[in-house]
Image (cartoon, rainbow, N blue to C red):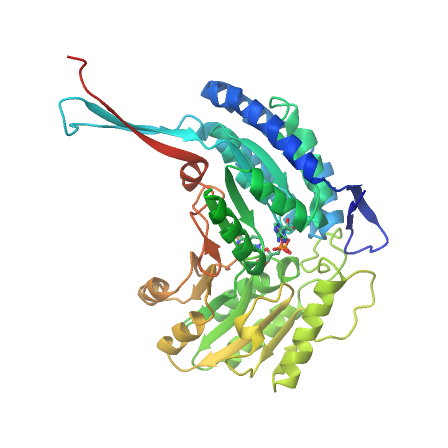
Length: 459
Ligand code: NAD
């Protein structure tokens, strides 16, 4: 029997979860039970589905304190962000408890003949969800809640590093749904691959490297698939930006939760004279509290594990070797337990450098100075990723103009690249996303299939 373990990033001797990995036969058994439960669930009245999701929201709300503690312990998320995630989890469930009443079809009049044509949506069946560890409640729920709301069953394969959060969520939610309708399969890549083989629709969030394999495997089976992946998110600071406000927002976007958000700012592109912004940014960065995530006021906790810590250290070494300047941070040890890295900013890198092209999932970002807005756009758009971007300016016309030309699914004006609203469509461009958007009203389209019915008079 293989074990799936998660270990607290701030207390590496603390094993948070140790459970048996699901086997291939477990995955098939779970799929059979889910399929059987889904048939009845698809026929349930919207009011029944709404009541179940609403009840789940209440249960999650009543377990808030425990969930916050678990999120902090298992993935090292700073307390204030963990609290935000738990309240977002409740909101997602409440939102989709109401979405069940949205129209799922339209009447087309006149139709081509003298009859009636209408469309209606049906649930797809068993939704396979493969999720990362960094939003251990919100991401599973922003997929599972719409899938369930629109009549599907759910098989969730969480990242091993966040297994305890997923299993706790299952425990809290399962009582509100028929047996078998919502199941968690603990495990790694092999369980994820097995899930693709049994699902009727597949939603993935994680790295670009894994997402591209998953998209290919799901397409090979002919099932609908959406993959939300990494980013190399730029923040563009225009010459007329409010420097103090921009520096504060961008420092939080780059280093909050140790830079481990798909929407974290990874590149700062400053147009014109950069020194004032750079000074303000360094001051903001150095003012962030780097400490145990359970301590009030902590902004930067540890990264998820030793491998992630080494990857950021390697990136710092690589930047120095390529002639980059470490403006703040660096690879000096932080004398506390856990996998910490100092929030680090680098400039002077050649354009093709890895730090400017590939996502390093940790508290590191690069600053690039350019002379013109056109050059800023060229830098911002050159990585092939396109998840989030921000523009900082006091001139609404300039900010809107730049926003029109950015290759990014999420564009923020005078706001951090981070921060996602569960009621708005979410997704990216290029290597950051494959398939339809998720969340908000976009979720209905993904978790249902559209059927067109044409009727003629019988005589
Ligand atoms: P990951 O790609 O390593 O893993 C994601 C999930 O895929 C996990 O459940 C993992 O077990 C599973 N998996 C891994 N290999 C697989 C395979 N071959 N077949 C099937 N499943 C497989 O990502 P991670 O380290 O858990 O999360 C960090 C990444 O997620 C970052 O790149 C981040 O940008 C991205 N992310 C994206 C979004 C978004 O919405 N765009 C949100 C959060 C995180």
